[in-house]
Length: 342
Image (tube, rainbow, N blue to C red; front, side, top):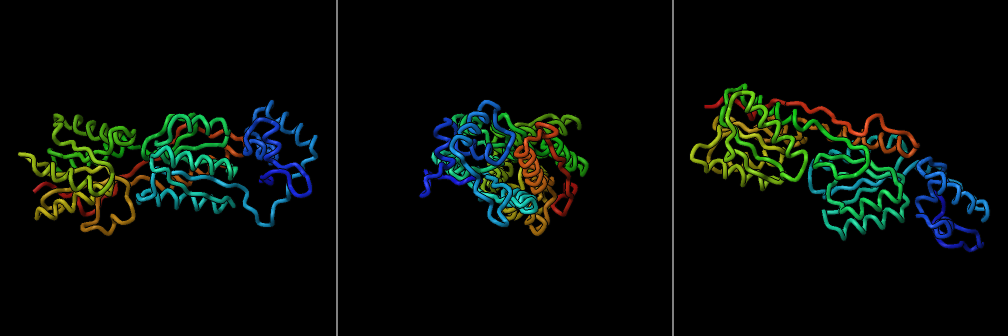
């Protein structure tokens, strides 16, 4: 990156001064200085003219300096799947010599605006967004800044003109429900995710498609919403157990909700899978050690993070992604939490 600040002690112009005179942002001038292609020809010509007139010289990079700085932004960081995405991002970013700044905006506009101010100050080379919580004005600011952006959307893609990377949620919901049907279950409950999220709706649609293919009529009482957290899985499972005719199996749209459901069953004195089968979604590391080990749909979270870094680094080089939308496959992992109905 070029030096950022006002005029230095020797009177030499800095990037901040060039940006002010050109009427553009500091990151835009930084991209021109570093030879990036993601700047309009008119803006590039105006900035380069000012750089020549002021005799600006790029400060030499320090030995071992990183090639890029990437911002990785979540709604929050208290979810285990966030850790899996970070793991994938860090692996590829480290190999590419890129630094990563991890932030959480918590769905609040104040947090998002603070992050945007920090992004401008850092002159980040690219942004990986794993949130649907930024308001439209901040979406527009990102576009104006011209910082390359990739959206990873296990929680649903915001309305941004940017490459998106997701998972095959519909086929995952279908596979989970078909597995339970293949074991002989006919009354299958669903603990769904928040209905506003695209991934939740896709998993619900996959569940419905499997039931319809098996000739089973939908029963709205068997679908209880949750929020992907264990507490909501616990509460939703209790609701299903209180039905006049409880289900014999439950598909929870996240592993954390599945673990909450298992705890609700345990407190009722019911056994998994002898009294009720449970399937989750995500394949987080801890579910291999749950009691019993959880049957679940593996969502390739780390791979989504890896692909996001590769894509945003391509954008920083002025290259186009192969596709504006990539969906990585999901896979059913059968363990000990599912069995035929008693």
